[in-house]
Image (tube, rainbow, N blue to C red; front, side):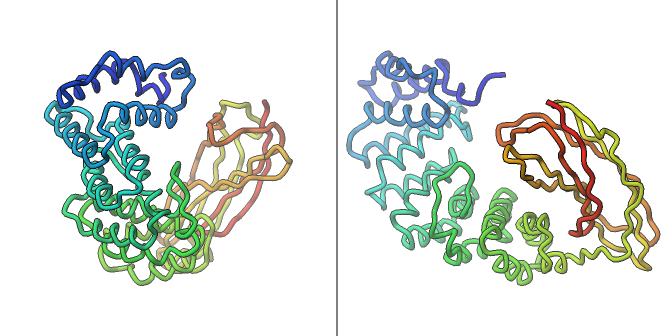
Length: 366
């Protein structure tokens, strides 16, 4: 399997250079490609290759930013005419170009971001503008939240996320997210699912620093439409995993008379690459139907001997009176870039409507 950074391949650059030759009469394709594949190119990671592409492209575009943006617009038009590039991650260097060379030209950059994000997302490129321009940039994003194109509306919510993954941090929004609430209010019932999901992700980000603000919004929005209800639920996912009491109450998740039995680890010892298997039974002994959210927590052993807790959802549904379910689940222990495993005793527990139940130990062998 090829690495993600290999989207920047000879085939890609030769194809892109063909586009450039159609809009820049004096463009030297051979020179362009040779400047891309410098000695260190193979060792560059994805973001390094993206920025390198931005910098090389800059050498072939006019030094005047307004003129360069005009040519970027022509590039996108040409790519669309050839049915190429739409939402292709490789073209993320186009918004990067605006971020690097347009930061001091607010008006031109805003028009460029609005255009380019309809071709390839500009959610990362807006971050330096948020840092530099603050309230002025938030006002621009409020304007974008009313745009006719859903990709521009999504830019308003996704670009303003306090904890946008892989993006430049915006400390002011982590400290005080209130300025972006008007954007989320505008988009909470957007006709586009991708926009609504972005709103939910923004809410989830806010909940990490300001849980009660999200609880307040959830109570205010709940029940308006099924789409907004879904936004709230997804936006409260971290609070649900943390068993935040007010969120549990909001969704009527109570554990009284919900009984757990026959909890058993089927693989008390496992090797890396194998699965932790467990089974249990759940029964609703309430006189009425009850919503039951089932989760399990794995306490991964860390290098320093402490535990790192990770919660995984099993299901959430209504249980009829006296209904019982027998459940079998597996949790694979396969190394990933964001988690390293350490040998020894690990733990897991079951969680019913936010209440942690039995905790058991198992051995991981490396």
